[in-house]
Image (cartoon, rainbow, N blue to C red; front, side, top):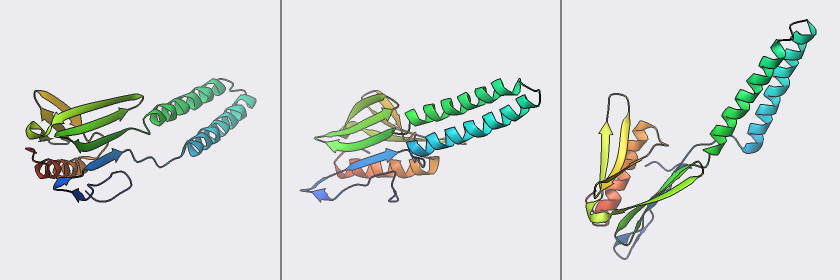
Length: 167
């Protein structure tokens, strides 16, 4: 994978066993203060326009201005709840470990390395990446665009092969 601020990379090898730690995060370009500023600025503009229309006798515009501001604030709130989502992959004593943060939920999954497989399902419009072992399948790479899921699959396969797994 290309080095970028959204993902970690495999570290140096130690005593014949690769030290692998990879983190995939969302690309959040706005800080919480910037989001607050945008919502407040939008509220001021919407209510100013609504007040102007209300002053001209079209008072029903004001409630719709309020609904618009509430909808924008709700959208930023939902987006903000997932701003810290990530997927972390690492190798630990014969296991491929996966930690997934989705909103407020944190889950950990273990795949025994000799049987862990990286599955790449390429459709007409999308690429689905999954890890499978012992009848368990976990979809990963949901935070990445399709072309980077293919790169993530290659990184995971290389790490499993280097550690003695199937890949």
